[in-house]
Structures are given as structure tokens and as C-alpha cells.
Image (tube, rainbow, N blue to C red):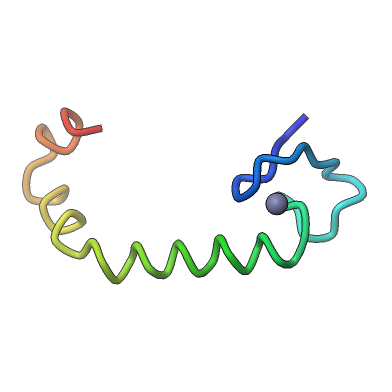
Length: 59
Ligand SMILES: [Zn+2]
């Protein structure tokens, strides 16, 4: 069974309108995190395209 990536609760995709999250609250939280990362890690994103070998090693 898939789990909510925010709180880790198991969810049923068929009966969860906010899937893959357990609810609107967790979906909003995840969106906020994702936007925060996009703004705070521009240097990492650039470096990955410059040096693919290093990007793999860091992963
Ligand atoms: Zn959740």
C-alpha cells in the first residue's frame, strides 16, 4: 500500500482524492517543501548539468 510522502500514513489511492497524499493538508505541505527546495538549491541544479559524473556520485 502506498504511503503519504509527508506524514507516512498508508493511503488508499482509490478512495483518496488528494492521492498520492493522505489529504489536502499534506499535499499543501509537500508543495511548500518542493517550492522551498527549488528556490534554495539553484546552485546544485546548475552543477548537475555541468558535471554529470559528480551528480551521480553525490546521489
Ligand atoms: Zn499525510
